Every structure is written in C-alpha cells, then in structure tokens.
Length: 218
Image (cartoon, rainbow, N blue to C red; front, side, top):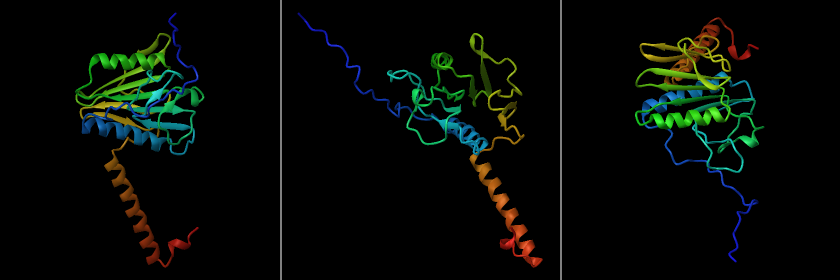
C-alpha cells in the first residue's frame, strides 16, 4: 500500500518581503510614486493611526503566500505608523488598505491591470486610482454595491476617505490637500522649506536690529 503524505499543517509558511520586481520601470513612474506617497505621509504626519507605504507587499490571507500584491502606494486608516517588511493583514486587525494607487508605465499590460483590479476588488479596497503619466489619464474606482465601480466624473473628484482632490490639467494630474495645498515634488518641498528658513532668518535679523534677542522670546 502506498502511503499518501499530507502537508504538515504546523509547518512555518514564509511570507517574503520582496517579489523580485523593481519598484518602477522609469523615472517618471518612480517620481509619481514618491510624490503621492510622501505627500500622503505629510498629510497624516500628526495622525499615529494612518499607515502609508509604497511598493510594500500586502498578504491578505494567512496561510497562502501566493495571494499577494504590492500597490505602488497604499493607505491604511486605523493602523499605526512603523516599519514593516510586508503588510500581513491578519496581524493588522484584519484591516485591508482602504486606498491604493497604481502608476502606469509603458510596460504595463491590460491583462495585468485587470488582474490587479480583481485582487483589489476581492480583498476589500475602497478606492483604487490608476494614473498614466504618459497619456495624462486618471482612472478612479470606488466601492459600490457591485464592488469597485468606475468613477465617471474623475476631474475634480474628492476622495471620500482621504479628502484629497484630483485635478486634470494640460500638464497632467494635480492633487490637492484638504487645505487647498497642491501635492509638491521632493524638489518643491525642499525649496519651500528653504524659503521658510530664509524668512525666519530675516525676521531674526530684524529683531536683533531692534535690540530684541529672538532666542529669549518665549
């Protein structure tokens, strides 16, 4: 009699932190991933219960390491900030990312994007945004009664979860914070910080001219 071997249910399952795929295929795609991810980090910098990540593997199902996806950017409202090798949903109060972003590159195929859509639809994503920086096209999907459904009027759309606004211009996509501040590139953020520093230094110099030590001002 041939004895059939059964898998050991107690065997430790490995959940790799990398899928071996590059974060981006070109500089344009990478720049957009960084802009969205970093500006969302800034938007929620004072909220300890909002986790934002870029190109992080998400495992929604415990016990199956083949079910996974690495959104270009994902936002999880209700989970603490902090470093993670991957997002294992069963270790995160079973909270799925509510919002995900994908930035297209010339190498992306329709079949691959449909596969990602199916994954996000099955596993509970509320809002899914796809931006093509070459065609200057933004597609948005919002969870409805039938799952993720296309947002028809995307220009000027405000995310229900994040309250950020999407605007399509001749130059491409612009994203605005709830306070009206446009999402800035890394270089623009650096320039803005430098301007603020220069302004502070000018004020300090003016105070010293008036005989006031700015270091003693409470």
